[in-house]
Amino acid sequence: MTKVITIANNKGGVGKTMQAYQLATHLAHKGNKVLAIDLDSQANLSSTLGVDVRRTLIPEWLIGDVDAEDVICPSEGKYDFHKNLDVIPASRHLANLAKLLILSEAEVRKTAGRKERLLKMRIEKLANKYDYIVIDTPPMLGDELIMALVASTRVLIPTQAQDYSIDGLEELMDTFEIIKESENPSLDFNIIPSMVNMRRKLEKQRLEELSQSFSVSAGVRNLVDMQESISAKKPVFMMGKNSKGKQDYANLWTSLGLN
Ligand SMILES: Nc1ncnc2c1ncn2[C@@H]1O[C@H](COP(=O)(O)OP(=O)(O)OP(=O)(O)O)[C@@H](O)[C@H]1O
Ligand SMILES: [Mg+2]
Image (cartoon, rainbow, N blue to C red; front, top):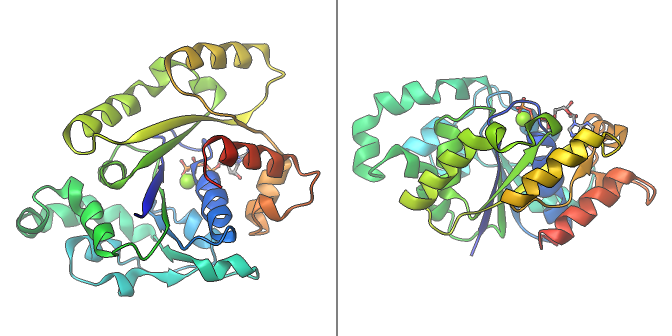
């Protein structure tokens, strides 16, 4: 069974795309067949995986106007793992998704019942061609995020220090609970501290408070390594053994059983 992992947080700039990139490349490097789906019209994940399209066909794929073969592209880069890693790229046109879904409402109702189920249906049609699907989502609680949550087996929620409060996560957790109850009872989640600076006492304290309510995994520190990884399009696992980013992510994937 294909495992579908969504990286989500309606807050912007918390490290979602970073995590999606590191996870998709790590899993491909381990020999898994991986599909990365970029549901953010900023298309940062697509470009880091070497794919730039003028116009994404994600809306047409969701509605059923085009087949998966028309939206899936091979990832591109100089490393071996790229052969195991495909991408469904985004472009700024994805911002029109909500409008398109309204225009195709009758069609959507006929095929999926509810628009929330569209992505899940399309993924099921891929018929276990992939071991893992990793989905990057935009920083808002919109159609893209909801569809991804309905289609997923697991959600990873990168969270930054200022949001280490139940209040900050409340909106996202409410949505998560609704989807769990209505569409996807087996959905699992982990909160992952992102860009951590443990020397800040307040940060440590807030993290401890958060751990009392939720399952919080090992975090990833705020590191220059990480920014270099994106600009060089080189995943952290390819960096030298002294790379702190490499260590943090290795620990994280082990603690989540994603080896
Ligand atoms: N662990 C880290 N250490 C240092 N910088 C990081 C780390 N993780 C991410 N960054 C940097 O922080 C910025 C935001 O990260 P990223 O783009 O992954 O966030 P995002 O949640 O996807 O943002 P958006 O909500 O806009 O999609 C980027 O410049 C990224 O390189
Ligand atoms: Mg992003």
